[in-house]
Image (tube, rainbow over all chains, first blue to last red; front, side, top):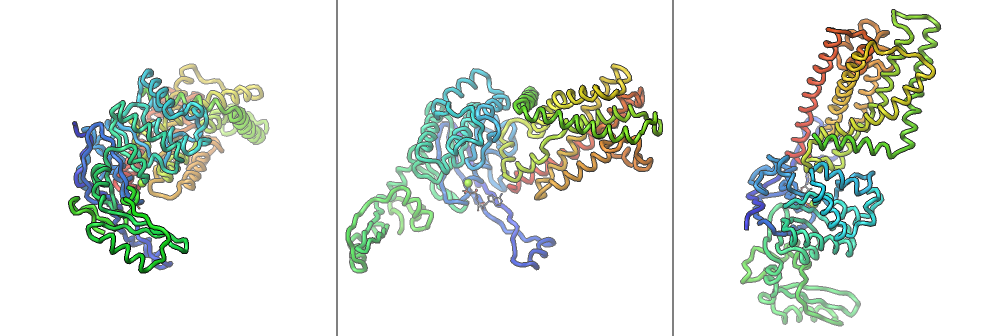
Length: 323
Length: 262
Ligand SMILES: Nc1ncnc2c1ncn2[C@@H]1O[C@H](COP(=O)(O)OP(=O)(O)O)[C@@H](O)[C@H]1O
Ligand SMILES: [Mg+2]
């Protein structure tokens, strides 16, 4: 398959003005500003093929949005190579953006005062979408996302879930082949999330759209993606399938203990390093236990453990994760 | 080009949706004009002319100047709001120029107000006040062209200040000062004819004279032949200078955003 996105050694460092405390510092700042360097994206490389659907996850401030911004051409990388759809996004922005769709879940692109449908009509002019294509897309998307009922309402009256669906449709009406969705499910309820997931899947399956999206919700990833990239502190720490990450941790177990005083405790460990016996003995020695269960950790927990440094992904899978 | 035209037309149509705005706009323009005409009628106190300028010329000047300045207003905080909430970067994701798109929207709004605020107010004024006719049909045509150039000068002045939102926390104060300067120096309070000679020489070196006064003089026939051409040439020159400045500020602002990330 053809390569759609190639990123090599991309870096983005922000310069943040350093603030001292007190009046002297404030006055001093007027003349001699000190800056701190914030490494938002620090040497990231990956490549994505046409037709792939890839989920980016990582804790807040990991550098996901910064990566999306570099890929969509609205931020220059400080170093490294970023190429997408045969363009260098930040250099050939005008040409490049014709064929991409971008949604920033936290910032709506819709016109607050106008009915939703008017914002869609505007896209028709801006992207010069042929009428037939526009109408076909609009009909299909509205049906899939169940939007007919609020097309005529001003955007400011829409619920967050409705607005988000509107934003997604607005970004896809011109049938882009490459789509970036930055937290398209943020703050939505389960039903709205499911609708959006279905829609993303549909766009990828039926139209072979290459999709990259970021989220905090592992469910999004499990239900939609075939590939997962985990970013933390500006670095890529995992790139592969969800199955693989689960496989690597089949030896990791979680023991859940219900205490007599009503408390609940969990402990996660690698069975090849620490025997179940030893863990149980310790627990029984220290606590009064009412109930106990041993389970495989959910993907959410694995991810959390990775963020918190309790599991390391760089360990070869044969040895499993370190506790 | 087609896209920008569509954007202007849509803005024009959006404006039609607000009926209260529509009536208030007419009333507002008509009242402003009437108030100024009353003041100047009192100042003339029956005199046929002051400094060689008849009351009818003054009335004509005010109808054109005030009518246009009412029609040419729009939300000058637009760019600042977009920079503050970060949605400005969304604009870079569209395959059209943000600057031209903004101009198209403002022009659409201006065109709406010219037709639906200014024309009715003009008809209302004609019911009670006699105005000077244009010197000739050709002068009227030239004046309309000159009005378009005047609009561009005004728009560029505003846009330049708006681009400063990339560096300043708020440009509201500067916009306000600019608007006060325009109303004084472009002749919306005191007709340019009555300005002290020294001040007029200063104004002649600024873009303000080119905004409303050049069209007014063309209409009245004060600028004719070579003078008319040179008036339009000066307008064009200001557009070139201000356009260049606007372009530089805009490029630098965008660069700051895409290089530093805001
Ligand atoms: N415009 C900016 N100026 C300075 N620092 C920024 C800017 N944007 C993001 N950052 C910082 O860069 C880091 C990565 O941010 P971001 O890419 O938004 O993370 P994520 O989307 O994964 O939450 C964060 O620490 C954030 O504070
Ligand atoms: Mg983010």
